[in-house]
Image (cartoon, rainbow, N blue to C red; front, side, top):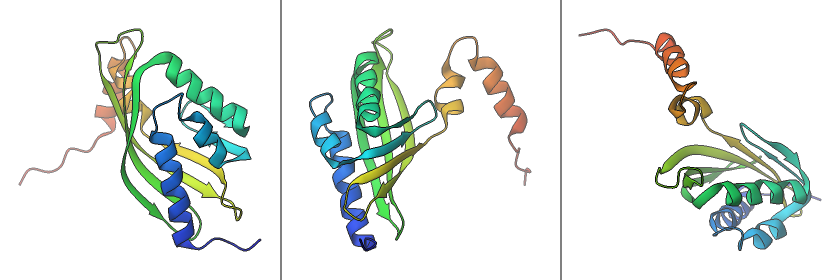
Length: 154
């Protein structure tokens, strides 16, 4: 098989992002149709392989979240991968009156046959999640502030 062109990778990334943004779990079959049987899904909390692993991630999200919604902010591609900048909005089922939102980027790997072989999420779990949690939030915020640079006053 020959390598894919950047335009093809971008088109496959766009299709993948549309499937990922579909309401779940109804959109899961379409997502799995685009995935390679050996797909790897990685985020700050999960590292799974195969369609079964990907389905488990989506099913867990649906089980733990009220109205989980992904919004695509931008899509790009290189000769090696596709990239999706996104926002994830949801309400935890344990506290459904509290809206949450995370922003991040996904690196999408596309095989020569057009199937998605890798979905690698990159987002800051420390500032977007841990710092907001009771008990561990204060130490995380303290560490973040101790590492931040204070710009000089002019």
